[in-house]
Image (cartoon, rainbow, N blue to C red; front, side, top):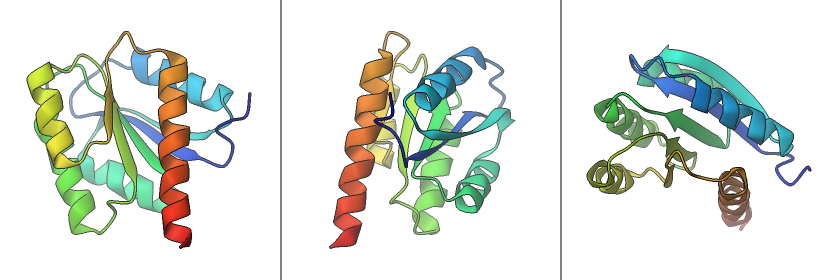
Length: 139
């Protein structure tokens, strides 16, 4: 399966969240779909994630959050805006309350995948949205 070929994704667990299993599973799913994945692991700060995203020239940032690190996700979104990097698609996964989902989307998070999300839904979302972004930038 290579529907994700040509897409580069940075996957990270933000803040003091030590729950790495979801991010590791999603990384494998994305690699199996043909995407190139840069896995940063746990305990990453927003600045570190942005620096790696720039250095690796990624299309997507995937954040795993299970420990109420929502303020750090919002900080990440603010920093992307300040650095004119809003063209990077940011998605999140984890046990994020519905009220917080609304706030994160207001900040610019493109999509949030709860624990019951299917592999297919995550891959399809990324493929659809990165392709849209690329076609817009070509015009």
